[in-house]
Image (cartoon, rainbow over all chains, first blue to last red; front, side, top):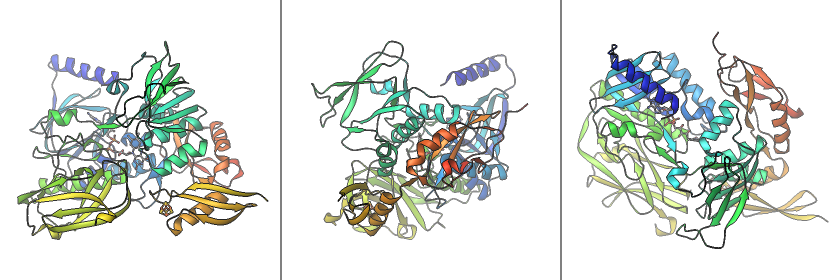
Length: 446
Length: 125
Ligand SMILES: Cc1cc2nc3c(=O)[nH]c(=O)nc-3n(C[C@H](O)[C@H](O)[C@H](O)COP(=O)(O)OP(=O)(O)OC[C@H]3O[C@@H](n4cnc5c(N)ncnc54)[C@H](O)[C@@H]3O)c2cc1C
Ligand code: SF4
């Protein structure tokens, strides 16, 4: 929790202690989080006939992480046009506003129970208890921090997660420092290297512990090569030093088990370290609600409607699994919104024989993990998956026993890029067994 | 004779082929390394006239935030990016701002405008 969140929570507590009336409300649908996931879920649920929707957002405005992602590269799939994060967000903010969805800003959700009671606090309203028919969890993700990584050394100021630095620069107009080293070469790290450089900072290096970058080639070219910022793979920071402020870092090469190789250490002088070492779905609330969690994604286990193991609680967007493209967040959240609407209107049919979806071989995970809904007017059911390591020229296959339900060619598969494959829903009507396996196989092996 | 090899990473798709151009006095003689025709087109354009969209921010007075995100309305010549940053840094815009508002007209004489990429309301009172 940030300080203001803590203050809010405390003031809510004392309000409750003073036995002030807790506001009690009932609503058809409560959406937790007003980022692109929450917005798209609300919009679609509304369009499918649910009118009583409340979006609870802890920030002072809607849009989530997109408001700080000022770069272009969003919307190519969904809008067929290349937008920046804020432009993409604004489209959906306008859509929910037009529909008259009840939006509560500066409102922090503290708890969601398995009975779908939602507790939220805000400065204006104090504590509100909402009894909801359905809940969509759309809290997004948070960044891994230095503590999670245990870099030894001093604890000087000047170490930021890349996302925090992004918010400082792009929304608050504050530069985190003048000479930076970036740890982690995922897209966020690459984007921040360019951003710091163009704002006048020296970016000494981007370090990556893996043998390859986790970011898109396009970002390597346009964020690093354009400005001669060095990318050093198989290297990591083994120490951060400095008294009050960061003065430098010690860097070491690593072997294939990511162990630092003795004798390879060298120092880089810098006043800022940005960590871009991964995102984790933000699931304290989900766990509190008792939903089953997935060991690989770090998010809830869901079915094809993005319903969790708790009846009426749904999840979509980065809270479910980390997405690299917001377009898929939108698609997934619309699936959730549509499914919620069907459930609330009582016209959802549940399959007698749920189908389990398994990932095998090179596939690290597949979302959804099972198919339980049968009510189908949808033609296609998209599966989202990731691979463990980069591969060239592969087929993504979905099989059931001896039958092949889908096969799609990918020129290149990378862990950093989510792959989607569509199954034809008609094929699900008559299956040899209630288990699908998803694999990614090199072209030669087919 | 100034004959040169120019290496360009194709970014027209995620494969990222390394394309090399044989260049003679600024004229492209041959293109190798691309696994599809799009790669040749991309490499030619990137050699002759590399362009980029520039996303950045501009200072705001009286807004709910002190910065508004902006971008070049079209891709602009890559060599002008840093000068464009300086020109944008010199302006301050008054809130409220609407998405699409022109923040800097014809930046660095490139014929490209810098436009706001979101609505930014003014602070109340
Ligand atoms: C730094 C970064 C850079 C990215 N760059 C790109 C890119 O270049 N191209 C691209 O297509 N995609 C990009 N993405 C991915 C894309 O932006 C995200 O996948 C998308 O924004 C996720 O949407 P979301 O709604 O799930 O989460 P978010 O946008 O994070 O929204 C979650 C919302 O929930 C709110 N919230 C959380 N907890 C609570 C609570 N307890 N109570 C109330 N509200 C709460 C948060 O304040 C936030 O507004 C990037 C993501 C990140 C993190
Ligand atoms: S040359 Fe063709 S295959 Fe290679 S990166 Fe470019 S578009 Fe992709």
